[in-house]
Picture 1 (tube, rainbow, N blue to C red):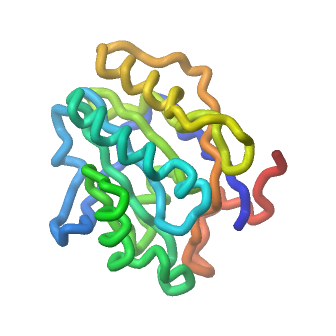
Picture 2: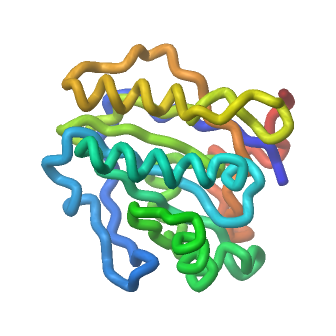
Picture 3: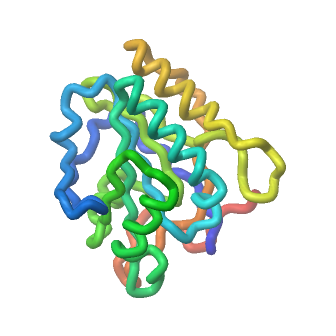
Length: 198
């Protein structure tokens, strides 16, 4: 595990396109969320301790904010040949066990993660009604072992602001998590194998 921070994609970036297979076997595309007042894109996986730390709260967040009208979608980009716990079959079981009500998509080629410059699991992005980036950063300051309660306060506040038709403050703290498990030899240029020291 390498502790990694979000790349902090520039605010205002248009949401990169995607079309990926969901845990229910159906294809889900960015276009499916056209017209949503807010779109939350989460890069995550099954096995990462940073994701496990938040997983039940992510499930609750998804249910709450989908009910408020936001679109929520999760994408797992990890190399499953080396990390079989993140396989599509295990994703199905994970979604059922956690009660994820949002699509949980498999990015087999890792092209979508690279288009978003996703770096860690979990990595969060919030897009506005025009699918322009309004927030990228942490769920909240809680991390495994730091004794800070999981609230989702940072992400919730950002989505609430976007749902209200406003723009979140650009003072945004990066998400911290495990590095995305890139296919060996196909790592993006922004991958920092040494990680960060916190």
